[in-house]
Length: 426
Image (cartoon, rainbow, N blue to C red; front, side, top):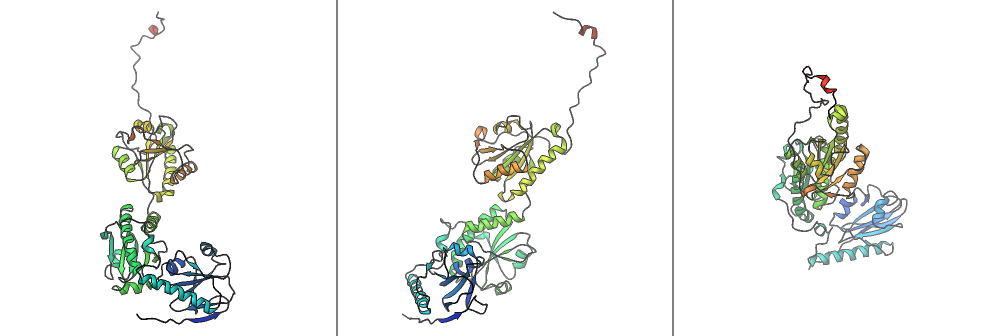
């Protein structure tokens, strides 16, 4: 058994830490990447500016958080006084508070004790580190490895930079433990994202030890590093969590940010209703007044309100439909609209065959409140009449014009004896 004796240099610093120090200035934007995702032991001092403290550096990394400036980060770890020193060791998500004296010897002793514990755990087979494997969303890895696209020096520009799609790209090294922990999450997320965005957001990987040109171009210094690529924009560092649910959520945000609002479709046949409601978590359906009651201007006003709401809620990826009053009586009946109270709106969950009705005004405010309540699970629901999507009649699409009264046949009264009409009959 070889024994490594590590020596630490102790420095004394006045005031705030400078760029030349071996202390890394931490803040909410880099804390997760630098500390929580690191294999290294960290001693983190939460301090108020213009104070003098002792610190060590070397194989133990030392960081400092200005807790006056970054109150949210201090609050996250229960910092109430200064200086507070936390030891981020085997479990980064449960740091140990340093309770010893503030002398250099006391700090070195605490660091060595933590290092001994980490070494002992790893020799006994415990993974330690940032516990990424224990944070995964559980279950089997899932996903299809073919949904993760292998990127190289040769194909990167064509596939990523010249693409209209959004890319999340992981730069990894085969020997990297965190990369291995991320792999099943990345694969599962790739398959879910491909399905939920119709392939408009893609997940790829770059072996940075092989494709060093790419790693150098994008300044990759640690593994895994995840970057977001959007056409015509500078790449962005991914700062979120690394479970499949975190990755999918970020991908869907990227998709909806760049996606056009959903199409607002008129219900012309059974297929339109069936596909829209079955392909989306909710389908929002409006029953608008007859064209003779509103004219083209009135109808377009209602449709404009719906399109604004579709834009506002596009991240939900719901389906949006409309029909004219009286055109689909079975649909109205199944939703309890009943041939009156136009305009009306319902939101259907076709998987559960449940629906909710708009109780407020058919306006941006009224519809927003209705959909907001639905999105957070509030509001009363009922079962769709008959327990299934109703029969839909095939109708002609609205031509965008005002309605025309039906033409009545002219009646020739020349053969009618008007005098007979004036006689009373018993």
